[in-house]
Image (cartoon, rainbow, N blue to C red):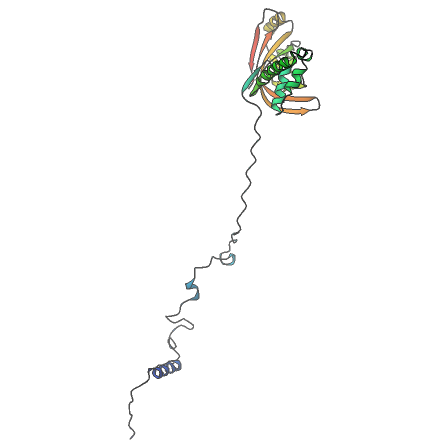
Length: 267
């Protein structure tokens, strides 16, 4: 009878190898009842060691975001500063309108040259010429300074009254005929264009009062007009300053008997 003699395992490495062979023959853990292909308890998915990737267009069905930084839209250009202020230039003469035109177009008027053309300076003797030129230049500079900040004109226009229109019940003021311009001479041709003349052209007045007005005015009236300046253009005929009539008074021109017939404000 053969006896089984048990010998203690002296070498741990050989024991480990034997155990591995035995397990391989049995199919390893889960061979009898585990799900096919399921990882063992110690298996770690590859993705777990890194942050989750952003979903692609294929995954979500949504268009992928454009990662390129968009160029910001350019800011709209600031509007040019208006040359018109708020000061009122009251009843300017031709020379003041020339100086206003120079100011509104950002030009420096040749005051010393113009001063030298004045008769008192031009024909002065050699002892007084320099002093007279300086004084005249200073006088012109003061007139130029009066146009600073101008944005409103107060002008007085001569007008005729039309024949009375009995159908509409009123007069037409010829100075406000649409298309008319107020022309100024001076060192440079300057015109004033009133863009809303058509609104002031007809003056409604009842027949009885119209007859009284006619007797007192002899069909001539003055229109004291306030104008808000709005623009400036250079045309072949010269510089044109544009404006809107704000209000006006209608006056008789009879000597020493001025009378206001009407005061009108336009919307």
